[in-house]
Image (cartoon, rainbow, N blue to C red; front, side, top):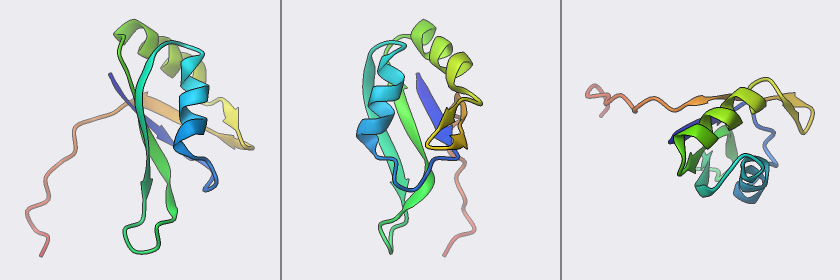
Length: 87
């Protein structure tokens, strides 16, 4: 299951996400989304967990939990919408 993780401090890295989520199960991958021009974190990322049950446990436990003095927003990632109006 792909999990959205928002309201991240800009210094949080992908290894930090793995460490947080591994407490709840096996993590396949993690990705911090960065600005394509500056390379700076955009404050959110995604974690992929193999087990639906483990992912749901992580979502329930971590949504609203504080990490680096910020309350996390954690939920199931929704498919990205295509934007055909972009040039």
